[in-house]
Image (spheres, each protein chain N blue to C red):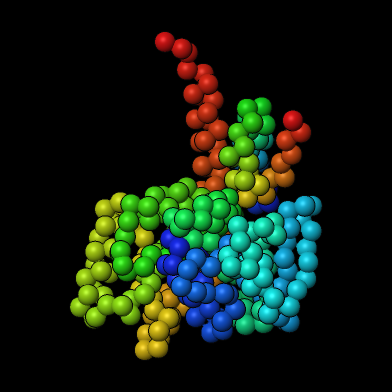
Length: 42
Length: 248
């Protein structure tokens, strides 16, 4: 999450949690593209 | 800068022409089956990336056909994630990566899947559209999709050599006006041909697109991240709203 403001980092963390919780796999590449290493352990 | 578009729109030919070197395989049937990344290195070589723990195999540039082309790697049976080509010719624009993507809308559905799966990584998108037909609903849908990932989307109008001077202007006006209707904030349209006698198209593209993009690299990169972030957050929020809607 290089270059992102803290407020955005918090929002991304929430979005990542939503993606993980609801298995929104189509959004995972976008999360990865903005620099978030995402692991779905399910 | 990633080049997207219908199959046979001339994406690989355009990149070869830009590099002034036949690096990528081209042909009369759909050729590109794997996303190919071109960037700078002092010595030329290529790397094949496999998805298993991002295993990388270093190969000579002359062997990339075996991994990229549909005829030698049908349906990507070798299971290649991407091919990276390193060229000294990229020295003038070493911050930039040129990306060739498999064509859309062909009978080979896996090609479209590979392109669209890679698309979230794009910061600077170029949509190649052949002059015949000059603009389709699918082209517009592709632009809309890419604009959710980056504000930096431009159009390359290829195969201009197929038209006479008057027809070239007619097609250019048509595409520009149609795109203005769909995207009022404007999209840059660059006419192009790889045929001899159309050198001014390459010069204009380099001066008006590549040089300007490189000059404001950080600004455009930041804008692309912001757009991805907006799309990500609005998609996640949209999903939560949908989940929160009580049943009627």
